[in-house]
Image (tube, rainbow, N blue to C red; front, side, top):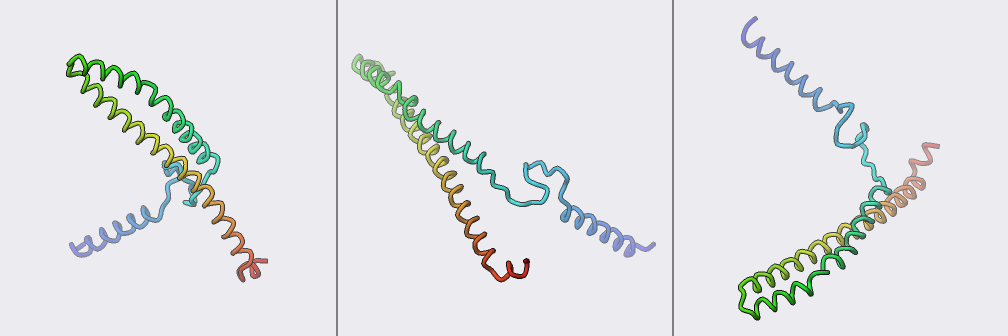
Length: 142
């Protein structure tokens, strides 16, 4: 067999293998998806995540700030007595409050975003169903 023939055979085999890998869905994709590849929206799971984000949002608003007053007073007292740690404690308290606000906002965004997604998905499903049942395709399927 000549080099050109071997090369041609090797290329054809490689192309067939690549094609098979690209067109094949493994039995267990590992990503939690379905074998059919359809997008699945589990409203119960998404609702539970949104609910937990809301609970975390509520708890962070109160529990994340419970030491703010005491820390501010301690920082003021230390600063008054000329301790450098007073300014550091005040900076720590300011940074902590900023981070808590960021987390509260993030939890609110997650909760609101998931709620919006669920409502939006339900509206789109209703619209698609209405469009499909009133279309000419529906007449041919019956």
